[in-house]
Image 1 (cartoon, rainbow, N blue to C red):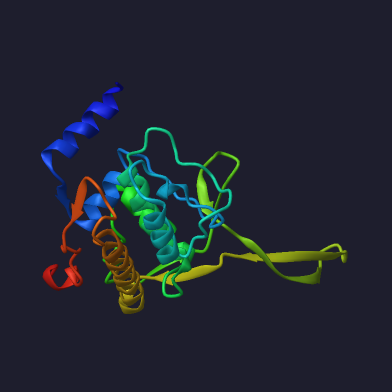
Image 2: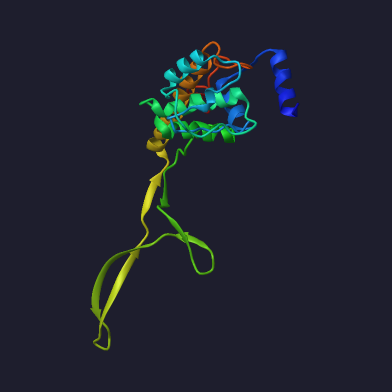
Length: 223
């Protein structure tokens, strides 16, 4: 018997672990290295030992996946519950409120153990739109060509010169803070949606997801 099988058998014997949705996501996409498959022609996340075909069909219908078809198989040595958690995140793509971009964002933050940055900057800053490197390898602001005009040199020769300027953007301030907070709240909403699926009785075997959610307004306690 493999070491991973022994570890999982001990987890089952000890009873389900209680985890918040964020902890469950970080466990699935972190140590277990779960992955998503946006090919909805098949969902191998449901091919679990001991689960009846009727149950798989019902869960696939909830997530919008067809029962039959191809698709990529599950990654080797991934805990079955981790694969099911990844499937729940994957299903965000089918939700018009979230989409694939949010599913990828949730998985990315879970893998890194982070949350969207809601802080921003209270002061407004002017920064270049892009950066490039000079001949010495130093990073400099990206410059683009502007208008071209002609002039007469001292020798009465006609010359052309093209101006260059640096496109800028303004970051920080109230607008940036509002945008970042909105993005954070969208992420919280996605975690709530995933949590609802993970708390369906029988969806997970060795994990019980609690009702705990990330704070909705962490900025209220930051002043």
